[in-house]
Amino acid sequence: MNQNTYTVCVVGLTGIGAGKPLEHGPAGFGSIMPHAHLPAYAAISSTRVVGVCDLVRERVDDTLGLWSPIFPDLKGYTDFREMITECRPDLLSVVTSDNRHADIVVHAAENGVRGIYCEKPIATNLADADRMIDAVTRRNVPMTINHTRRWVPIFRQAKTLVEQGEIGDLRRITVSFGGPRAILFRNGTHIIDMTCFLAGSKPAWVFAELDEGYEDYWPYRGDGGRNADLEPGCSGFIHFENGVRAFYNGSKGTAARTGFELTGTKGWIFVDDDVMHVNAGSGVRIVAPEPRTESNAVAAVRELIHVVEHGGETISPPHAARITLEIILGFLASQKRGNVRIEFPLDETTV
Image (cartoon, rainbow, N blue to C red; front, side):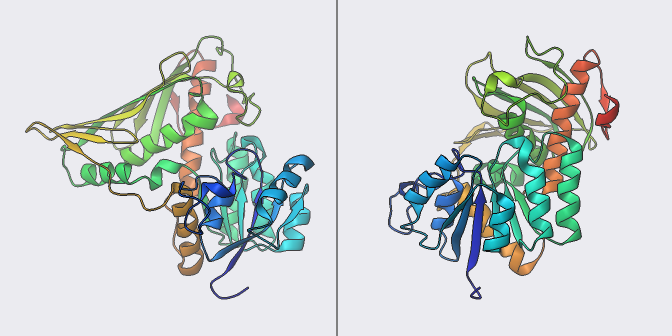
């Protein structure tokens, strides 16, 4: 490996895993900012993808056809262990179904991978999440979970205003999340993670009610996020250790909308993916997002490389992703027990 070049492998080639070459701009293949993993690596000159893997051989072959002209050393596999053994990557992207992350991450950490970029949610049960965290912690392997809003400037700006006391002491967060993909694990994880990020605290307890038709939903019964009908929407309450209370309104039966209302002792903030409204007691002002020069995926990879080189922790570390998963599972446990309050830490073996 050259000093400033990192070899990369990607496991999982559907959707956000493979993408298309035209999705990235800096290398001259188009102007669309890359959100998929392969296009993100193509946009960073210090990374070179050498291996791709998927259980479906046809996806592997299609990916090789699209990306070999850009990554001439690219090889395809249907066994991630074989790929890691032969390619010896520095970085690994894990873009498989949600319930398949754990074995891949553990094997990668135990076999020389230096940094891991894993899709969200971290896992679908706490035991798997703990295996992953233990593996990367014991071997000091930096890992980032793709909770994308952590790299979006407008949300970083909102958090800064809260921390600076712009609206006094934060007291409440109300979250709206609707549309057919407003499901807890694959998509709701983004919204719950950002709620935790803005609250700046760990959850103490939760209670919840799932969407109609999912009253007996325990344990996870999804297919890794492909079929939204296999996962519930939810209305939930989160009580954080610092006293902040959050209301999560996520339902597949409501209009598509995403936004966070932060209420403090002196004012409020409403922020979504595009704009922020702030009222600190002297009227509403609109705060435009800072200019974005790269996509969330590119920002995530650059940060992971920085942590590999210099140490520290990514902005979306696995232990934070575990907290989000614990809240999701706490919501399910509350429903199963009759919509009661669920204290943390959650013991999923006794639900």
